Image (cartoon, rainbow, N blue to C red; front, side):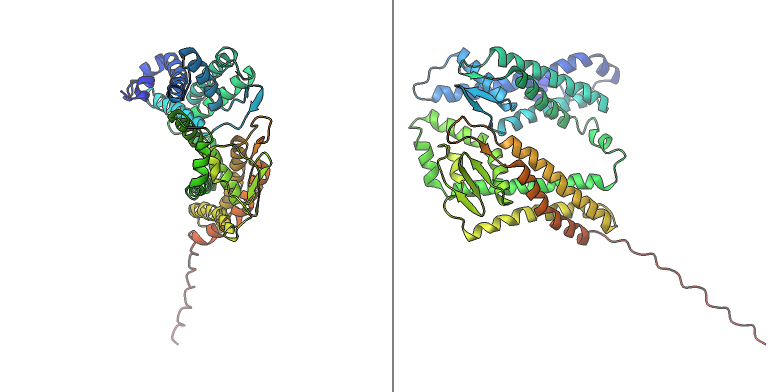
Length: 406
């Protein structure tokens, strides 16, 4: 039996009356299941890392408390570690826990015939409330002595992340998108689709740039591993740490590609130059560019242009009227800019109080740069690539009848 089956039951739908009668039990199971499963997964991974670390002493209580802190971090709850703030949190655990919540809620909705927006509100609200309660409990009583979190931030952060993830999982079974777009112009759906495609191109290109930077910097990667000493546990821990921050790095690389760059303390990097300085000994940071800007770095600007062009191509189906396609393409750029603003805020944060604080992707300038780089290629491609209305030929007027013969 899969994890989803264990949390939500078999996938075969029940009759409608039975579905509605046990709605309370379904809500409780779906609300508690992902939270408990996510916590158990975090505890298992931490137990593996701690057990392989040299000289580490592992106990059930210490592992459980450490898992609580990581679980809060996965829900974007800022932590205080040994008196220093930690707000630059990895995004991969957030994505994985969000996928678990979305999959469980979507499966439960399909199984129990929950197919209305009101059903989605009840289910997502219950999931958010239960995660808020878990977050509050962990912040108050289940973190290590050297780690603390604001109970209010824990309750809000866990509830918001879980509620949004549940909403994503219920998007299709409860037909949330058609309900949200009811009354919107026809091109709005194409604008959303194009923005999603353009954002995917931008972030995929950013991730590819990070991986390429790691491949060409094997010496720096080795030095970062060596800085933590020998031991399988250290290697596993550093690898998991680097992998968990890959989405953050992809966002930072996307910001680099549009010219706004990324900064870690006093260190900053853009395609136009690098301000060097110390960075944490984390293998992932070996991908940061070093030295003066090279002329070929200007190739990075092709990434947002390609993202805009792909978004505009998706809008080519918005209608026969080029003006309609242009409106959809312009909306693409705006939606991508807003999304990049949110991603930039999530990717950075406080990192202690020393030389590495803060980690920052400049959200405002990143959003403006994305809009500026993508709007023109999106509009041009949407204008020229779509169908064009064919004018209906006007029939020739009937010729004058021949005059009657004399």
